[in-house]
Image (cartoon, rainbow, N blue to C red; front, top):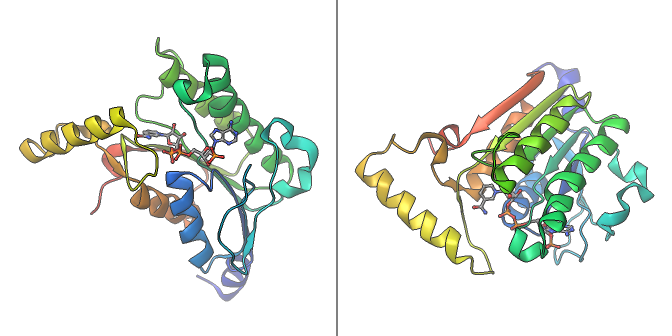
Length: 226
Ligand SMILES: NC(=O)c1ccc[n+]([C@@H]2O[C@H](COP(=O)([O-])OP(=O)(O)OC[C@H]3O[C@@H](n4cnc5c(N)ncnc54)[C@H](OP(=O)(O)O)[C@@H]3O)[C@@H](O)[C@H]2O)c1
């Protein structure tokens, strides 16, 4: 890297949405330690219980994302927001988080000059799926891809593995089953392999440091330890 590029890289601001979540928490830890970023802005709806010189943690209402547009000023926006229909209470409430908040935040950041958008989507994302979850993720991907970013990286993990406070039985069963299948035949799961949350965070940050314009998809088969 040329000297000039290094100076610019070390001045980057990352905006992170979802810092209280499993993947978002891993992203936060890694972004705070990463030399390319001078500032990490992580808006949340409840305050984070960490303090760090690089961290700015505004507590916000996600229903009013455009209240302070300058908060979205950054070079790279990382989005790891998401809920479940059960947790959100209805299909509409699920879509509000997994589609509306994601696309709205990405659009605000793009308007504030962000170059890159890195989003956690899901294996099976497909705007034509008859399943609400996969369809919503697919529609979100298409909407984010249409925004005028220099680079968009869409990550499609399989079942996420990592320490989670909350017990999600379905995810635990799926993770156990997929681990079992992988032992029998490592390649069979392809883009439905389970994904370690911390590895996903690492790969997202690595992607943001590459110079690769355009829209990139990162499937679960790509999100495995080398
Ligand atoms: N879990 C899996 O196995 C799996 C598999 C494939 C893809 N994914 C996708 O991966 C992404 C990250 O998953 P994760 O497991 O890291 O998620 P998570 O641990 O449940 O965290 C979700 C994040 O979204 C925020 N959020 C949820 N509802 C919100 C609302 N109404 N308003 C504002 N913020 C809200 C949460 O904030 P609070 O802490 O304030 O609630 C949290 O920061 C999601 O998009 C998910 O769909 C997950």
